[in-house]
Length: 304
Length: 295
Image (tube, rainbow over all chains, first blue to last red; front, side, top):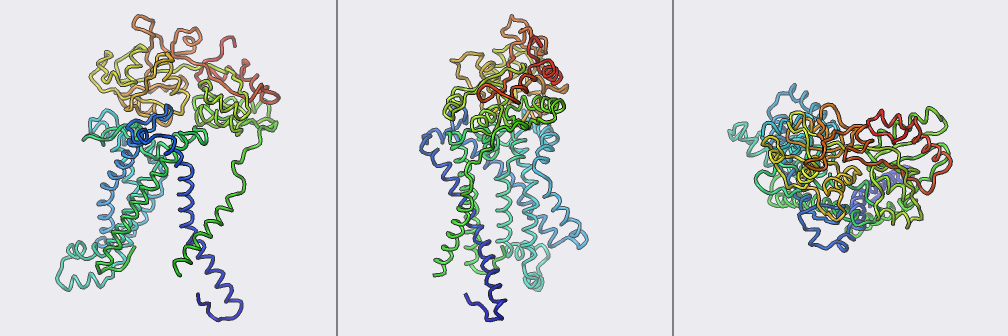
């Protein structure tokens, strides 16, 4: 690196600060790698000790040596997919409204309100879920209990929404005004401009927003532990959303307290953590690939 | 060259953070000084333990007892790894836990400090008033799925339970679901809701007319309805209360334990003696548990 030739004192200070910033930036990657290594160290022995047929089973009774991970993985996936299905259209539409359509004064009220929504602790949302949402779900849908995947989906969608809205709105904001002007000059209507010019141009940023929403949803622990019923059943069949599920995160939170360090149950719980980590990583990787491929296709700055 | 340098930076910072973490591995708290007694374990007993701790502190201000929950299993694990002085448990130590204790050089000593009844609760809107233990067992294993099969309305049965690390769960599994038979290896139905606390069980049972749940007698609120339980169809159907536990007529009752490392001495012995005395047992009754007979 080239160190600018300034007065002696400034020269070393600049160098030092540069290195410090570089270290903190790189340490983010280092932390993630170390977490991965720790998970592998504690969880990989489970792959040796527990036969694969047990781990791929459909029943989870860890206190009796039955460690079928499928109900947990499917449970997490079900609530995550449901939450994104609800919050993605809602979030992007809200971002479009705030960024493109709403008058200044509405924007000034909405933006801070959304930040406030994001600030409510997950336990409080879980409690509201048990007291209000769950009885409503039971009464309106006729399901036997309100502690279902659907209740989890609704609450997770609520929690992922502020993340998606904020970042999507920033992405829309970053689209140059010249794009919109060009569209108007070609006599496009406002909606045509938004739908065919602004949104495609902001796509990388919006994908990032949704990915962060997915990360929020799949990693949420307290809320799902309180409202999804934690029943380790296979969520297949058409009524899967109206039945209880058990997520990976709730399993780790509920069971980690009592396991003896180094026992098989402990190792399997770390394996569950590893699966969660890998799943999140794969999702993010797929999103990153999707963004970069579009970049090569031409058009649009990297707006993420 | 640029890639090499970047990889080198990442590697060096990994080493840096790894070495920073190599300070103390597995820090263990030093065990009881004479002024603090650490008490970890059963969530069923946590309110009771807190009440004891507060009352004892008023009598002996130089001694403070710090109480945390986490489940009977958590308490045992903490006793074995040395992070607690006494462990509360709503069940006895399992064989594996005894082996681990021996491994760690500890001889756990068991003290019965109170009795507890497990109440079976349903919604006040549910017309059922009594159930037999075989019926409850069939409901919780999933063999019976509708309330009309036990004489109620045509509704699906929703099973509420504690999580598997709870002593209450274990006791209910062994004595009700498995009907006290050590050869029986029935499990809870996979459809059963494993709820994180007594409060959530209480809320679900109170709101939902399909639900049945179980919990310690001290946790039953007026919003829930307790079921009268009998061992068999002919047997007397008894509702849980202090009297019916003490005279042995209520079938689902269990002792509550405190485990110490070896025979207790000094401050811990004084504390345990006080707990089993009249003062300590009066608090047991106040909290809805059952005092030891003869106090």
